[in-house]
Image (cartoon, rainbow, N blue to C red):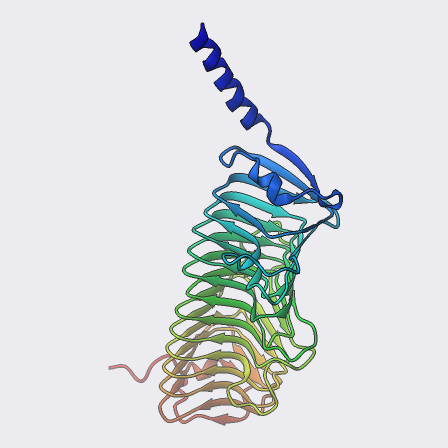
Length: 382
């Protein structure tokens, strides 16, 4: 009988722990999101609704199937006190699976690396209708997998708004990246040895709108049928931009079923500033999905053993070069829809060590400075 009673009590305790999976945290009345999370069973599905402003650091570690829903106006605010030694984020998600955070604003100060950090191999993490304001924005690291849906990032300190490191994989659907008028140097998307797939994103007034390095890659694809937008817009009304997309160190920018539209990129001095700058063995697969207009610097720069492929793209109205190929690099303008390169200071440029092929498929190029411009795809074959 005593064994039966003990077993029944144990089963009741376990059932209660798994059943108690819905919580409401009202930080306006002094409650704590961190305290509520500490009382949950990490392997049972749970939903936490957040109300008011929670001034605290929050760590989500080792959870499976957790949903955090912000009521209208719900905010997670970094405390004014110094962060704990192990905390680089206001909201940190580590070693977790199937975690969704929606409707929450996260505000950070310069004393932390970023507002939100997702690492430790976390997967199936979804941030939806989340806004960040402050240092960096959203950092994904240590081979984690994240979806960002309608995220809004206002970066006021630090470097990048959305970052993918350490072979992490980030899918971005819609959203806005913006910055205030200040003297900082910022990037919108930073893929350093990470992979980003996106559509419907607007990136505004960043010095480097998209920065890809260390073998990282960014793909523009119409992969989400419920998305509000398809194309990625890079705009620079303030004139502070240096590069619309900077692709270096054996990295790649691939434009698939979503277009990349870059307007007003670069600086008036030209140089290596402009809409797209490829360097150090990197590739641009633009095909017909790159639209560059009114660059204050160059249009597309292909340098240092890099390669660009275009077939139907458009580079128009730039103050300096349209398509600039140099330092043992190549550009391939494939046959099909004509690639329009016109109205630039110099439409086509290549140095003596570089080459542009497919000249017959380039439309409306008037100013040309390229002795290695082949009309077709190859030299004369035997």
